[in-house]
Image (cartoon, rainbow, N blue to C red; front, side):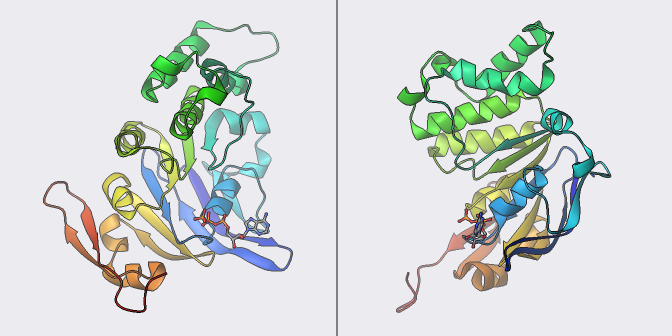
Length: 260
Ligand SMILES: Nc1ncnc2c1ncn2[C@@H]1O[C@H](COP(=O)(O)OP(=O)(O)OP(=O)(O)O)[C@@H](O)[C@H]1O
């Protein structure tokens, strides 16, 4: 296993946000993190990235508690694309993506061919080659999102953590990003709201509700009509897709008095 959370709890003051959450991300696989608004997805991703420490339990990377790993080692291994990542508005796309190389550089090394290659490939994979010299404030929300993804790829991580990375993207870029992520031989943990996209592109899913894991397994095991009703408060029919090998969810309209 690569990134593992064992019985992780996180509280803010007296308020429990995550309670005894365990999950294990398999190398080279995509683990989807699902759950309604406020269920604890972002909080858990921040713990997995080492940006926060759990109140109880531990997060480990290949068996070592991430608290024992230095910031630089963690940054060489784990890239995190946050939901509302901020960026200095004066930079160009290429400058933002170059920041991804920072953990790999020392005070004495100049900009190397390996840095150049990593940045060029990351920009191409994120579909930003045409925009590489554009200034940050001229980009659309979706282009900024893709530039942040390029920066994460330039980091050449072995673990990639993405918090709702498709939420500003048009449908073409949503599908192409998820396809890209699932084609990389990286360990990927991705929080998603689109349950059909999760079913199509994730190998395994973990569902949070109220800060606890309420389901985990393959998309077929996890995305049941009962779970959709009990956790997401929607009526739906789940069937094997005739077009791909994964389940497909048909959402049904709310009955009278059930909207909102
Ligand atoms: N710094 C904080 N201070 C107070 N409460 C917080 C803080 N961070 C998170 N919370 C609370 O913890 C709960 C979980 O939040 P979190 O952002 O992890 O949920 P989420 O599943 O990512 O939600 P969404 O789908 O809306 O992005 C929410 O009730 C939120 O208000």
